[in-house]
Image (cartoon, rainbow, N blue to C red):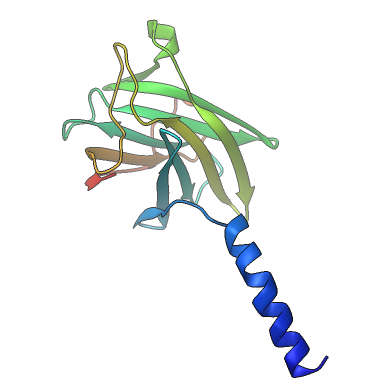
Length: 168
């Protein structure tokens, strides 16, 4: 291929590729080889959590710097099936919000295990209502929990858990 032909091909194909791949800006936090990336789109918070485990993964949000009351997505990938629930922390336990009469609106659920590392992707409403509501809107300050376990059973406690304050 001549140089001019190649340059023309790249120049003509680049705008189309960029239009297809346009995504909202992503933010990311990494702690001890555990990462959480997030972005907002269509009034939803999209998240992607990745950790060095084949057990469950969890990411949670609270208005206060405490574990109690943290609303969190806990998920697991088991035999290529991804399962997730919306829970609330009530130490030393946590409960599915649906079992307490609340609603769960986890969508866009995907998961993968590759080389001993699990990745869980999901979306939540940026602004929910009801008894277990939490505001996950852009630029909102939250106390975030990241956690994971070596076990797939949600009743097992975390092997790793960290809390940080951040701006969504």
